[in-house]
Length: 230
Image: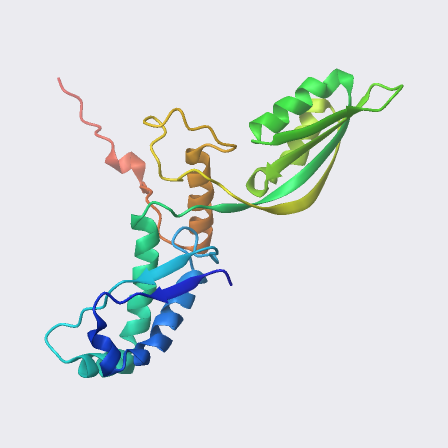
């Protein structure tokens, strides 16, 4: 794993009181945070957690360590601290699987092919024409969430004149903050807009039964005011 946890105590008072007793619960808490990230409860990578200080209140260090280890609170506290740090630092990013898409089509429906790919946030990497024919080969990279329904739309828009092939390519991290306000950062241009990445996150969290910031309306007809002012 690329994830690290580094102790950098500002106060060295724990050194003589057995701060090594905290190594195991701290590492366990970090590992639990790394297998259930803050965005979609998925594995995270490339993260380094630095513990600068630990403060125990109203009791001795040894008593506090014993209480925390006995109750298992140190593991849960470390996990929650790691997850909260990634959210508060605004550095949590979403990684998406990217597929290599190859489309074989003729020149008559080439524009329709590009329209479908652009609507799916595909990144065109190459376009070649087979010599002596009107057949074009279009290669592109497309995020996995946009693959759903792609073949049906491609067949419909091109009247069956385009043949498509998909092959997994790699995982790609979306550089933009999924919770950023794009109205205040109109100069930021990425492959996929932040609001679309946010929709990916919410759909995954909803499928897993996790909490999302969404208003649910039940019995909307009962919420309407039917009284008429005379």
